[in-house]
Length: 134
Image 1 (cartoon, rainbow, N blue to C red):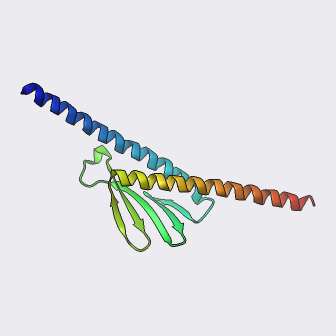
Image 2: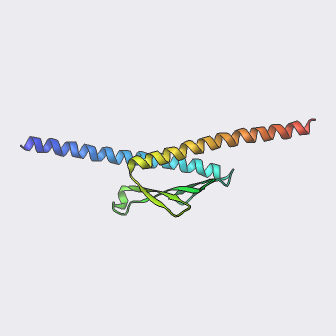
Image 3: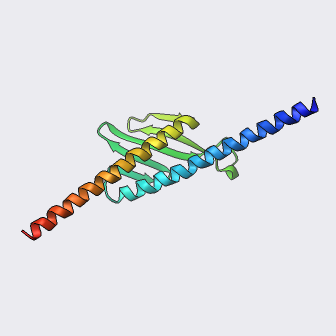
């Protein structure tokens, strides 16, 4: 019986450590997306990164993802809660799976926007250079 209890305790502790690692990985990804949004904010008004919120302006309004410390956890753990915010005032508290989906979608859209801005800038430079030498 003691061996079974110890086995269950070890498995439970292992899954807790795994969950903490998953959430810390989410923090790293959010930081990368935040950095990308900050860079894009310098090039366009469609993307904002301020405080702990990343916002993208769309044709239908603004969509934001917010990261804040989870008030239910000890601050030392740095466990974050993620929320999806809309310009209509809707706030959706995200579980781990949905937080991953939202942050990955933001990352994908921001990378696509970065590439589009680069291509447009290259085309603008090309047009200016052509007009100078013609």
